[in-house]
Amino acid sequence: MPQDSSTDSAALPGATSSSTPRLGAPFHRLAWSNLLAQSAEQIGLAAAPMVAVLSLGAGPGATGFLTALQSLPFLLLSFPAGVLADRFSRRRLMTLAELCRVVALLALPGLMLLGSLNIALLGLLGFAGATGTVAFSVAAPALVPALVSRAAWPAANGRLELARSAAFALGPALAGALIGWAGVSPAFVLAAALSSGAVLLLRGIAEPERPAQPPRHFWTDLKEGAGFAWSHPLLRPIVLTAVFWNLSWFVLQAAYVPYAAHVLGLSAVGIGTTLGMSGAGMVLGALLAPRVARHLSFGAAILIGPALSVGAAALMAATAWVHSMSIAAGAFFLFGAGPIIWTINQTTLRQTVTPNALLGRVSAFFMTANTGARPLGAALGGLVGASCGPRWAIFLAAGGFVIQAAIILGSTVARLERLPAPTA
Image (cartoon, rainbow, N blue to C red; front, side):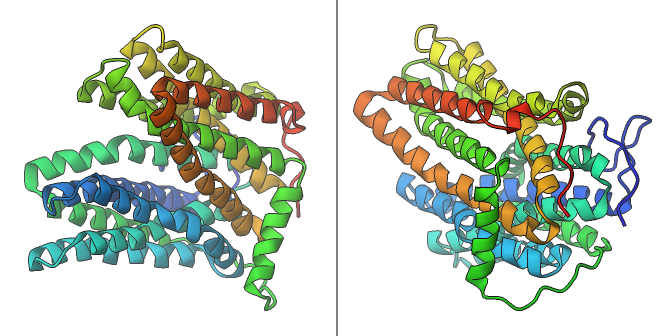
């Protein structure tokens, strides 16, 4: 049964204080396993291209192929994972996927030792390792309502996002430092150890039983989940806002490095520093999200993320006239803080209005829509940047961020005083 708790400030999983909600031991296991799994992913994502370049002599084309394979599971496997999460044990799905990541991570140093590793195998193992993150992203939000009471959902979602933010901020730096100090193999061994820890924590979660689902065709399940999300008056504007945000973000991502180097005149260190500010913003946003939820109406709280993104886009566009590293860093900080507050609030809304039997598929629909927008945005940003110059790609991204804010501002979601009654 869900644990009694109240909504308050987020902290790292397992932390306790007088103001921290009592989320219960099962949720703490989920939160810590999420932190370990996300950290393993970030270390692996950062280490793989280093292996490709430093050990296999890969060029830009090969590293691009590698990045594509590592991100492909989010597009191809999210919906199947959502169906499985609604048919079977969500804890078991995360456990099996995380075990797949452990095997993939340990295979990399083994193949390197045998001298058998190549770019194709590195990409395939990266694909296999990403299945753990896909399963966590789909199944963990669907499992939260079974572990904590409804009043604690915002705090629980905040902790999961805080763990992801911390891993996003620290994982790549840790991978780089470890590879520089001890070589490539220890980085993958550490990631495998973290992933193994996530498996052990997941095994200790007592997931409440759910009613058995009648046998149905796989495509029927897919259509039911997507149809529910698209037809729901509160979920459709959330989906559209997220799609336009991801399109705009990846237009910006595709153009920013050449823009920063050739227009802003930043060095590699300066570019890395500005990009890293988004991780700091993510951590702060995850910490502040529960406080924001307590002091504002739900509609106002969910508008903060899109509004901050518009402000960040305006700052970035301003650097076309004022070539300032500080302004660019401030823009990335806001790009990190705003979307995390948005993610926590829209996840809570999704959990509230979606029947438990559909939570996995609805989460998968959101992930598939967002992931599908990313390569389109990157291609558009690259095309505009190459044909018109990186400044115009930055301006295009700013226009997209205005559109995503307008979508949610004009929706019913923005006028909600509080969360609606939960759907049975």
